[in-house]
Image 1 (cartoon, rainbow, N blue to C red):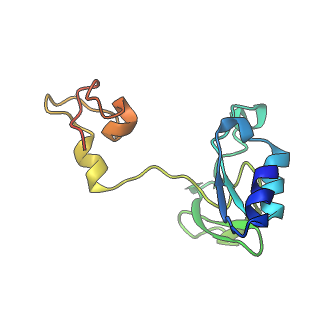
Image 2 (cartoon, rainbow, N blue to C red; image 1 turned 60 degrees about the vertical axis):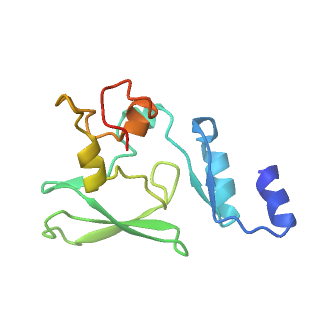
Length: 143
């Protein structure tokens, strides 16, 4: 946390910290949140992650959808996919498994267009940069 504290001491006001998987642990996450900084880290394959504790809530109607975050409350909001459950939405306290900022796959037409190569093969919806680092090694069309 020293680097974040030093940045604040020099007049910077970071609101997010993007870190690699090595920083995915409770004390780092909590330290960032205590400083008003939203940590963004990929989840390590811990027992809780493997058990599905980081997944979205579910009900008999399916997987709930992410409906936003309240930074003052430090919680994320989730909604029943059909709206039939009571309550229709609920708040989950933010932690390393349920962060305030959620990384979601892009679903734009640009990604859809780049997911098929000139020979008709697919990169499974990944953009060229993530599939082959832009080298066209996978046969996709660079974007």
